[in-house]
Each structure stands twice: as C-alpha cells, then as structure tokens.
Image (cartoon, rainbow, N blue to C red; front, side, top):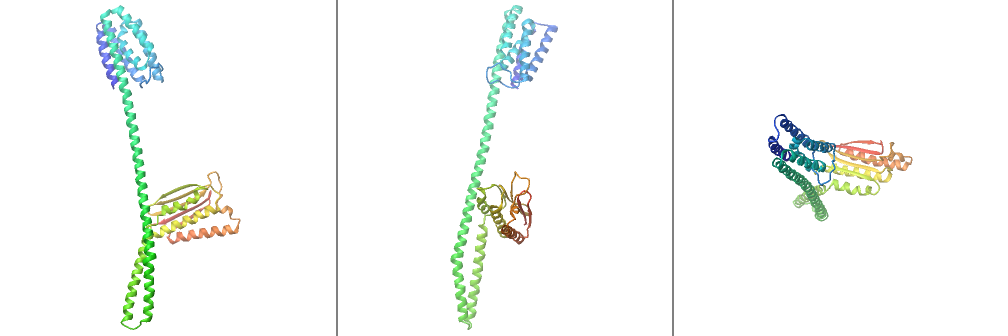
Length: 380
C-alpha cells in the first residue's frame, strides 16, 4: 500500500511539472505511459532487496530491470519523456538498477538543454523525493517483515512453552497419582496384615468359646459376638479389596511388563483407557498381556511388537502383535511347532488367554498372518 501511495504522489507532481512543458497529444501520451509503466513495475517487483547488489532474482524482476532501462533510454533520446524519470528512479532505487539510474541522470541533463534550468530543477527535486520515498517504503517493508517474523517466533515459543508446561503438569499429576496408588496399597497391606489377622484370631477364639460354653444365655451372646466379628471381617476384607483394586494401574503394570521387550524388540505401545475400568477387566487384561509377552520372549523370531489397549464407548480392545516388517510370510510362534514341548507350552498359554477372555465375556481372535496376533474385545 505504501508503494501505491508513493507512486500516486510522484505521478501527480511529475505530470503537474510536465504540463507546463507539453501539451495536447504529447502530454496525454506521457500520462498513459507513466501510469502503465508504474503499474507494470508494481506488479513485476514484489519483494524488497536486503543488499545493494544489482541482481534480479526472478523472471518478473528481470522484466522490470530491462523495462526501466528501456524507459530511461527513451527519456534520453526523447526530451518530453523526462516526466517518466522520477518514476524510473523510484523503481530503480528499489531494484538496485544502477544502469537505469545513470541513464535517468543523462536524460535530466538533456532536459536542461531542452527546457532550461527552472523546469529541469523541478524534475530533479521530484527525483530526489522519489529516492527518499523509495528508501523509506523499503525500510518500512523490511521492518514490517522483521516484526512479523519476531511475532511468529514469539507465538511459536509461547506454544512450545505451553506444551512443555502441559507436559510438566501431566508428569506431576502422574507422580501424584502413582503416589496415591502406592499409599492405597500400603494402607491395604496394613489393614490386611494387622487388623485382618487380629480379627481372624478373635473369630477363632470365639469359635473355641462357643464350643466350650453351650449353655444359654452365654452361648447365644457369644454367637452374637461371633456374628459381629464375622461382619467386621467381611467389611474389612471388602474394603481391602476395594483399596487394592483402585490401586491397580493397568497402564503402569503393562509398562513394567514391556520392559522385558525393549532390549530385543522394536516396541510400539499405545494405551488409551479411562480410570473406571472394572476390576475383573483389569485382571483379565493384565493376565492376557503377561501371558502374551511371555510367549513372545520365549518363542518369537520377529523383531517388532505392537501392544495396543484402547477404550471405546461400548468395549475395551486389546491387540498384541509380533511381526517382521521385512517378511511376507509368517515366522511366528507356530513356525517352531515342530517340537512337542513347545507346542504344548504355547497351547497352554493360549488356553490361559482364552479362559481369561471368557471370564469377562469377551471375544478372542488369533491370526498368524505375518507373525502372531491376538485381538481381544471386552464389552463394557
């Protein structure tokens, strides 16, 4: 926009100055030529130069380069065309076209011989104004680009900082969550080992007392105490199980189990589940994964392993696949089935997996295409 305003100002002043030199058809030709030349150069010269080298960098800049020279040559040999000199100087300053600049100076000198000092001085002043406006607009454009670059860099850094802050927050939340799970496990062990054992001993002692004191009303009172102890024991057992179940972190458990694979396999682990997975499903998933990892470490010849556990609106989905990306055919567990002991072991492992899937009413699909793949779906 600054370039357009600059050219409008220069054209207006130049044509005003030339109106006293020319008239009629020649004046109209100069007006049209000046407008066409300004529009073409504005379209052809897009960027700003960061140095003073006279080196066009695109096809459009080359066209503008030669167009400036042509117009300057016309102004040298045709004195009325001196009205185009300020525009040529404006664009040649921007494009570092020193050839056009020298020719423009020659054209101004020739106009002095044709029109005299006063009118030529007016053209010189307009040309100086054109140089000042061109340099000013160039600096503004460069400053604007620098500002946008700094703004974009700042926005990128802010985005990166926000991402890092979120990672720190997630890491802190994970640490707090793990600490809570550890504390729940500790409390459950304390209740089980201390209060639970004490109540069990009290229940046994109460049974002995009931066997000794069979007369009423002592026997009935002792029976009520024994029932109270049994109820307390059941409540404690239920609380301990709840605490222990809440402390089971499926993601952490699978992460610990997969540590065995990282040394010898290219592991891809993807776990995306909520915090409300039922206790039977937790046990089933951990047991299936443990059995599958054990079979992989013992029998698989492949180098890649995928373990994926995802929660969907209606089900949990577990996929465990060992494969070799460089092979077209399967070289999985079943390839080593020539040994009877191996076949029996794998069969027992798969049977354990199948029984765990059935315990949570899930479905099991096993594929041997390029490795060994276990696909488990467990309904919610």
